[in-house]
Amino acid sequence: MNKVINFLTSLFGRGQRSPGTSRAWSVTDLHADWLIVGLGNPGAKYAATRHNVGYMAIDDILAQTGDVLDPVRGMGLQAAPLTFGSQRVLVARSDTYMNLSGEPVAPLARELGIPAERIIVIHDELDLPSHKVRVKKGGNENGHNGLKSLTQQLGTRDYLRVRIGISRPPKGSSIPDYVLGPVDSGAGLDAAISTAAEAARLIVEEGLTRAQNAIHSR
Image (cartoon, rainbow, N blue to C red):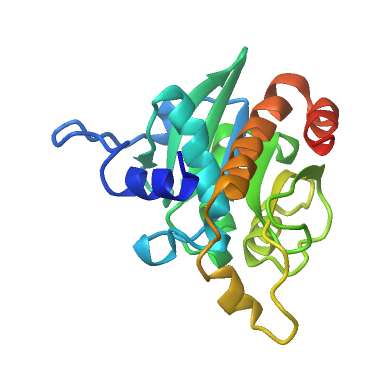
């Protein structure tokens, strides 16, 4: 199924709880060994943009289990607890805009006692060809405002990254306009989103090096 349509459907109906069954997590109710965060901007205006492929990957992870995101009280984000193998995982996306991504994520990580090396951030990457997925630990933010916010709030660059390539815009084009422009949907994007979701799971279950070997060979 087209991942953009799948993601938009999850925002506007599918994947939402029925009336009267809504839930809001308390941080004290949540326990996790890993935190997986998809970066993006909230709201329908930004849903199908290049900057939101991280959100789409989180939706893909949830689609595999049938789980849904619920608000975490006082944290400015939504989350769902999952289990990958023997590992407890919390998948999340913030309710803040991209350039403030770190403000809800860092306090949540501190409350849960999750160190940077067990935080996986899924995000769009200008410096990769469209639909190419790569995995790494740390490194520069390369102008990505979501990563800049995370680095500032976490106090380190040593978190793990699943990077989904969106390529750079044509020379002379505005980068903000480009990343906030509509993503090219289709088989290539579908594969990239699925691969990013798989990469996050592989990191948790098999470690960074094995995940890199599996994903980078594609």
